[in-house]
Length: 155
Image (cartoon, rainbow, N blue to C red; front, side):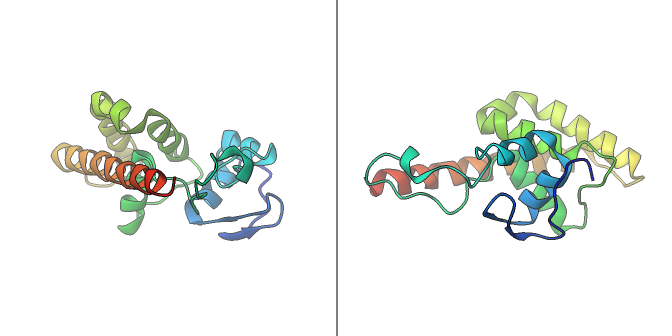
């Protein structure tokens, strides 16, 4: 464990007073920047009701960025964060870049995947990795578009 996270599993976090799904729980344990944001009350899920415009409903979870979408897809096939990988920081970078920022960096992201596959001694296909990254970007764009529709329809 890299941070002072006290939670064993996903669920309600008594320290940060929010419900953390598995991905947030892993970020809290392994990514000091996310842990500090939650400590300061500014992490995902901690946005105050007063920060939203009048009539806008606070979403239950933030929109999944391309890094989160990619992470969830890899997790479904058994590829998860390890204590020695840079996966959490890569997820964070991709989410911060957003879909538009990830598009010109697909080769960088595929390079991360290739390096991690080599470290874990897993088979790797550049073609499959390219398709998976492009799919994650596309799904993130869809999520973003849906969240904007919901936000504009409630005002």
